[in-house]
Image (cartoon, rainbow, N blue to C red; front, side):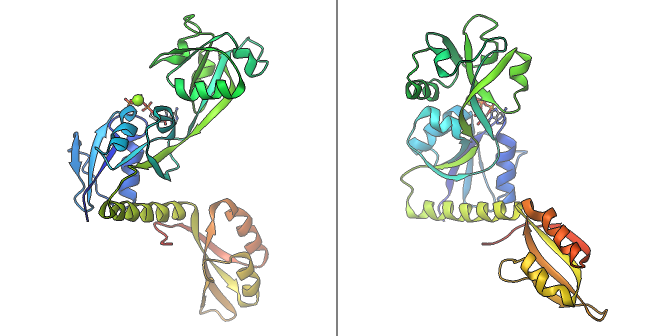
Length: 285
Ligand code: ATP
Ligand code: MG
């Protein structure tokens, strides 16, 4: 297989989780020798560490075939890349916020006002969509202090918990863009490169599925087995094994995390005992 270059953020909010994801899908990363370029010893991948701002551009230009970056950067930079997978970490939103004591009257509040942001393109699109004419002040860092410093009347910035807004006397009034980390790919991969990407996607999917599922096992009176199968459908059908105690069996299955507690209560109600719930390392679809 061809060796592919993957650009990831060198230092910042996405770096650790990017490396953790690669490890989770069985790609060894030698963090001790983390440098500009490093080879994965057991997978045809070469890591390129860089600032997140530059990742869409190097992937679009082909210097790196792949990249892991926030969808917000992909959207803002506007380079032509394919989003190959959403990765579920680095979730945040880009929102408009105004001073807490202002009364918000809807998008027209921003008419004729100054908005500080590091995301002028995403903001410009939203403003034109709403038919609002505002002035965009581009600043690259500490956007949240702009209103207090009278650089702007409002800000358009990344929010996750909202704590930074509150401590700067601001309130969030419009959530404009939802972001998470994504795996991006150059649009012209050759077939060898595509094969490596497909293998990564296959593993990412398996890891993602297993994170949302739990392995569950329990002892059941044999008379309750049919009912238990209806409660826990499993991938094909649950595994049932006899127990030494007469009239009892052990049933194993896989259950979706969001319905886990509801299922546990249903199973207890039909006589299940000794219920164990285990984490799943991988599920191969
Ligand atoms: P660099 O030095 O690489 O340019 P940066 O300062 O631009 O780093 P970070 O703050 O590390 O960027 O954020 C990287 C990405 O993480 C953002 O583009 C966004 O997708 C996501 N992100 C940023 N802030 C948060 C947050 N508060 N919560 C969750 N994810 C966030
Ligand atoms: Mg950056």
